[in-house]
Image 1 (cartoon, rainbow, N blue to C red):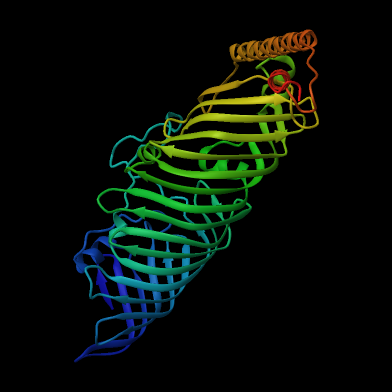
Image 2 (cartoon, helix red, strand yellow):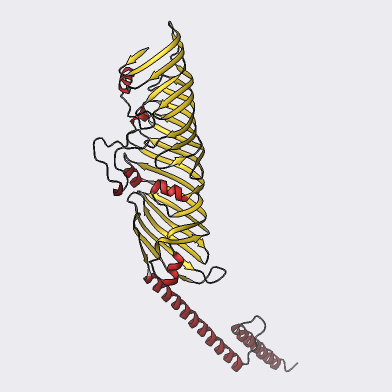
Length: 442
């Protein structure tokens, strides 16, 4: 039994010192993490809630080999309210301990995993945008690891996951999480997510979401709950900074989304078109659609899209504009067209401008664009009529010229070709006449 401060490690088994080796049952209650870190010669890690901030204990069958490696079997690891069971191998021949493990867990409580440390500073109010407190990821540098983890589910605070298989690779303070068979938002997630704590903090990912509920997804991640539909999403992103606000303001990436039937709450596009009234917004208003698709790029925390297409009964809409992910603002233009023909053509299109903060965007119909559109249509109509009148007048002149010249057009022959043929025939006739005179009529 060894005690270090308030931490206690107990071992019951057999061992020797020449060479150093042991095997038996071990229990460890690491209540005093600072004392344990001091014995190990490392700085005390600032563990997040759910991964050992309040409670850390370990038990299982342990084997210490003459080579210095440590092997745990039938291990049970308790970190705060979370329980992990399985086996692990730990080596100490590198710059940091290396953990290789296969673990099973039940429902994990990780709501405090991304909780920032303010370092004594006052955090920004919730309504002032993204949190600006410093995120401490120093614990990533404590060990290297390769951990295969199977969980029944997880509460991440902002969102929840269902059953999942994950592979965590931790190398020099860079964590790579590979998602395998992860159930979330009513669908599945696959891909990679990276948290890099080398010389600062950056996060990135290459993820594919299939069959997810967009209302839950957007509500959990961005506080937006007005889009009800199932869909697929592909997303690549990278953000750099030591706070959520800094990361969101630096995001770069690209992606594409495709949605099935659903509804957009708080906005009635068809009602706006019928009345030219931008007041069809707010509670009780909605646009039901058959499908929606869009691709986008992200640079400097600003998402840009120019190919949104929404199809709905009696309505088709296109959209383009920007979404300030860092500043939480919108500057977007949707152009809905009320369809009047079965083939989707015709109708009236009135651009709708959406701008302002996410929490209270302003809606404005661009009536100037509508007027310009009407003028352009009228101009095109007049130009077409003028061209038709000119063509008709030209045809009449050609017909009159052909009549006066006695021209008869053959099939597929223009009036110019008929005139040329008539002149050629006259020339040939005159030539024959002159040649006959020279030959004395013989």
